[in-house]
Image (cartoon, rainbow over all chains, first blue to last red; front, top):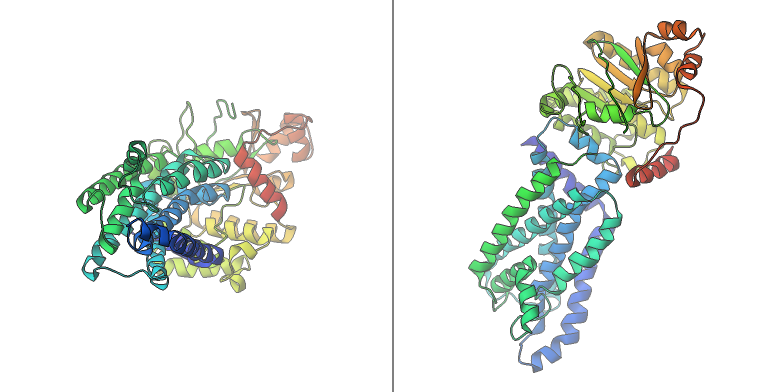
Length: 248
Length: 247
């Protein structure tokens, strides 16, 4: 227990001490909300989609969780490079606990991030549809955070240098975000794109958030919850296994 | 192959130096003994535990000061110590006491609440050594612990370690490139070269065996005068850069 706690605490301390990370993690979603929200708003309205900010905000919340969570997971590469990973790996504690502590830390940070963006979205005109669904929305926030922290851990356990990091950003994070339905509705899209979106885990996170915070679901909340839950469980197992096999 | 058929044993409470030129296999041996790397063949026992199959028991038995940096630079000196103490399950009151005592000992108490990234190379080294001692291990591994430290600090730290060695029967396994340090501190020495142990014995025995008057000469007689090239991977390379910048 104390092992998990101290690793969780470390993730939080690192997050709150990194001013650049906090500013960036607030600035980027704000830019997206302002530029896309107001930029595409009129067209979206005219096309009969309704208020674009209402549609977009859950997507941007999901995006900020994705970025923060994946980055927290990937931080293992930094720890490896700066040598700190060895310090935790020679300690007499099961590696699984280390992985759990890190993952919970990353999830907490990412969830906080999601909540901050949720609050920011009110500034640009987002309005909550029903407060009764807030606990469910929070659950989706945590699930998205868990999923991508575990994914980051899994990937980082396989990489042993920094070169792979840029590759992940370009070929994993960006497609996950852009193909998820965070920015556009999945209805009426070419079949290929819909197929891609339905294997993108973030689609279900976005859908869940949209269903609980705003209006309209594509897959349905139960489906969203089940898909996210299964992927989280699978990634925790795979990530935990790969993490336990790290040699430094 | 980094090490090949290395065989040695260290009795409880001994101070043992593991010497060899760059790339001889010192760090690889330590990585295997400390569960970070799995050997392809052979057998090891650490305080009676097998580091491959009995990892947690083996890990409980030792403390280690790594050759390259291993601190979390975004945490303070105190937090690094605290993190270590919690991971090794040192009870809170003992932990607090020891951290205070060790930080005062390595003269970092005034800086305990500063982030490690603002520390000089020597300060980081002192902190790492202090951290390795928080849980009073049965066996202490020191991989080039005194690299970059001035003679005063080296003397200071060795006297503390020797004291622990005597009072708590702590076994010490260290590597160094300073031969006079090994000569002064170690009860027994093994010299490794090209992944094989080429000589073992007390400093006096090694000198007698090679008919030399200093350990440095004995070392050169045993390992030759050719300068070794060390192969480095991508990560080692990055770390090397960091070390050069910081030390």
